[in-house]
Image (cartoon, rainbow, N blue to C red; front, side, top):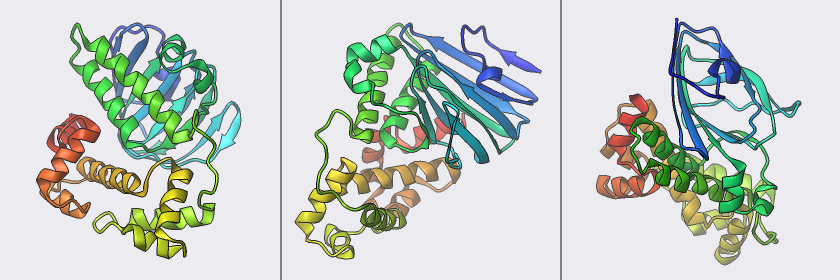
Length: 296
């Protein structure tokens, strides 16, 4: 049996079709930005068809998709297992189709943004270069989507201001993530060296490597490494390490019952208070508030 609020234009059974025992769908439409939360039980396989006239973001809130296939505009792309926090971006007039299988209970947040708002806020010349991206992770984009989701759950007369500001941030972060609108990078790390240093960073959240360690790993000077890493990623090594630690902390808050103090130590923060301040600055919520939102 399905339980649905009144909807216009967004149909969960068309966007992510599946056999389910219950389905709950809530939405708020602020005019230029709309958010839909969909929760389902009794599903293990779902078929995706996202072909928006507006720019669309989907973030997985609960449940993991472990196997499947994805196609963008009919072209097969690599499938990435999607855990809570995994994000998909589909530009207006593109199509994402496919299927996935995983947990029997799941939920997601779907945010659509009118292209006229994005053109006015960011500039059409920049947005035209954005490509679909399925199953990626980014702490800043996740934080903006979470804030939009919070406004959906507790809307008030000024929610539209918060929602539109977060929508603009989504596209600012996408542009930075893709290096669009910036000067072409020259002299960055080779793909092989970049993969090596990223693997080291991601394997050592509790004891982050120093700049000298990373530079020594690929046999370059500290100064050269700092410059080349930033040219390759658009971020300084310090920023990249900090964002990875926060993303790791968010994963632990979702998936474990570890305390904030234990997570702070696991992710290399000097203290639980330092962790709380850094996490709230990045995600707009304290660790306990973040965990409560994901589990509500």
